[in-house]
Every structure is written in structure tokens, then in C-alpha cells.
Length: 263
Image 1: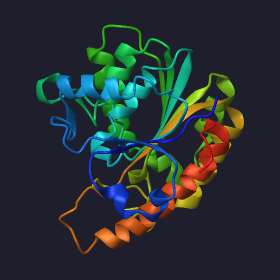
Image 2 (image 1 turned 45 degrees about the vertical axis):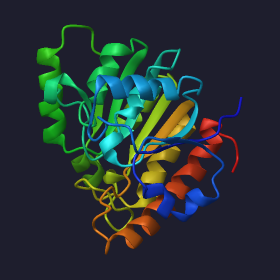
Image 3 (image 1 turned 90 degrees about the vertical axis):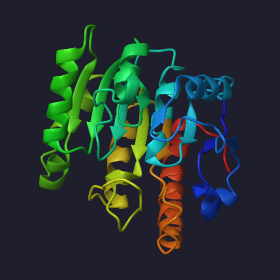
Image 4 (image 1 turned 90 degrees about the horizontal axis):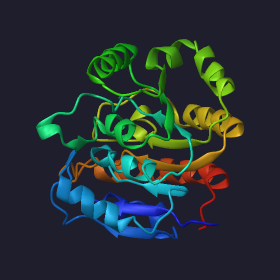
């Protein structure tokens, strides 16, 4: 089965990127939906889940800026077989819930673990080691149920080349993966986002993805990390050009593994 990519428009970011002008995709307009920026209200969550009810978790999904990374959780909850989540991100996205325990861009992995029992492994690639250890300890302390296996290839590991844990993880299981990519893992020379960023080049990220996708079956993938600061008019053209190139390059790599329809 082929699946068109799905593009969420919480902002106008994609309308400024050349890549999306020729992409044959399903577009979901969320610009008038309230309760979505960083935190997702219960009402917004229900409406967003209704909008993707007929879509498969396979294929590639574009989620707009990192403020809306919590949409990944909705796709994970549609998967119907045991699987692993691999997150490429400059943050852990498994922090303790904040405002009124609402689903958020910083805590969505916690909610995915709670609501999707088929999620058996989580591999985080890119967050600082201290952040990962802190958030993991808090999760273990507060969690009442059975946690999936949670691993990390930290920012420091990537920088130092101490990446043996990545290969050990790939060899330890053959579960299919769902891949989530926040472009804030990239250096500002490769993408511009509205969050603090890592220092990977686009070529390095592609290399890690190639290694992963050559070893595991890919169920689906999503990409976020658009600029998200429309008031910064001087940076908008540069952000649009960089992010359009990064999105197209990542899409072309993922296409052969996540089985979306061709453009």
C-alpha cells in the first residue's frame, strides 16, 4: 500500500518552502485550531486525531515547527504491531508534564509510553547526556507501569565518536521502527528552527539514518523543526531555503523505506 505524505499546517512555514510547492501530499490546515502551540488541549487533541483517522502511520508526515512535535504521539498510537521509536532530536521530549498535565512538545514520549503498549523500545539520538539522565531518572521515579527499554546516543557521544551503543542497539532487536526527526538536532548551517540546536551536519544525520534503515524495517516517519518565528522577517528567507533543502533531502532518503507515494 502506498501512502501520500501528510503535511500539517499550524503556521505558514511550508508555504514559503519550494519543496512543498511540488509535493503531492495530503494537507491538514490547523492554523485556526486553538490550544495547539507547544501544549495540546484535550479538545485540540480530539480534533487532530479525527483529522488523521483515515490515514495510515506508514509514510512520511511533516509536523511544522517543533512546537507541534507532540503530533508524533498520535501516529505512534495508530501502529498495530510491536515496534521501536527512534527519535533524532536535540531534546529528550520525555520531560515531566507541565501545564495542567497537558500533552506537550516536551513530554509527548511519556504519553506515548502510557497510551501505546506496543511501544517496546525508545532510542534517543542527539540530546545532551545530562538532560537524558535527568529525564530518565524522573520518569523511572514517577512511572507506575512497565517502561519500555530506553536508550540514548547523546550529543556528547556523537561529537566524540563513541557510538558503539548505537550499533549494539541495532543488533539487539529486529523490531520495526518509527522514526521521528526534529531538525533542531542539526547545526544552524543546515537548518533553522525556533529551538536551541545541536551541531550535526545534514550529511551526518543522513548517514545515521542510512545505518538505521539498512538494519530495521521502517513503519513510518515524521519530520518537524520549521522556523516558526514569522515575525523575524530578516531570517525568514534563509530559514525557508535551508529547511526546504533539508526536508527534501530527508524525504528522498526516507521515501524508499517508508513506502510513500512518489511525488
